[in-house]
Image (tube, rainbow, N blue to C red; front, side):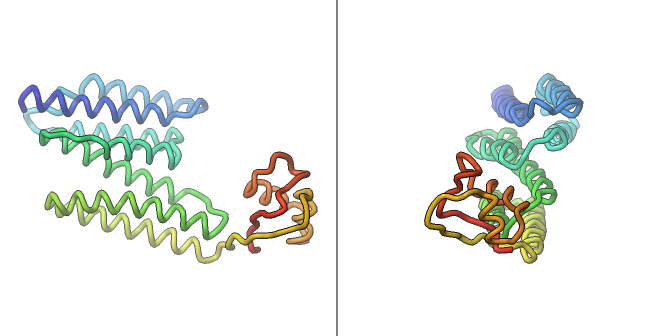
Length: 227
């Protein structure tokens, strides 16, 4: 690998690693420290591992481990998706840079799939929104793999995409839908919960969905779960 190709790839790696650190939450604790250690080690060794005479297998394993550790440390869907989106903005011209870009996108998708598998949903609309987001992300990655005739990656992406879609669709079936309510004026969340569900404890659901300035003054037109 010539110097120009190596420098381009390393520069992209550094951006991905910085973005992974950006997923850390203040309360990340030991898992967060482990992510910082993994990122620091790869940032130091990326050039050596990418240019290894036996191939870059160790580099890609270490990069995948950084993504996995970011998820373990608490990266949520939005944070991990931001890393994926960043990688998609890269415009490498050398093979090593292209490989780094594609790998980062694909590993991010794998982590997003795991995050979604552990994400609880309150309504079918929430699942639909998540499915729309992940479908768009997979569609682009699948197109890139197909256009580059990377059959192995394409089949893996299709299989993972299908598994995610099936999981979300299955979990959506028993969930209630969001419906709208309308009252002549603003009323307390407790009153609405009692009126709609005969259960004042459901006020928390209404507050979470409508985000009023104060629970005593819910919007006259708002949203509620159907059951």
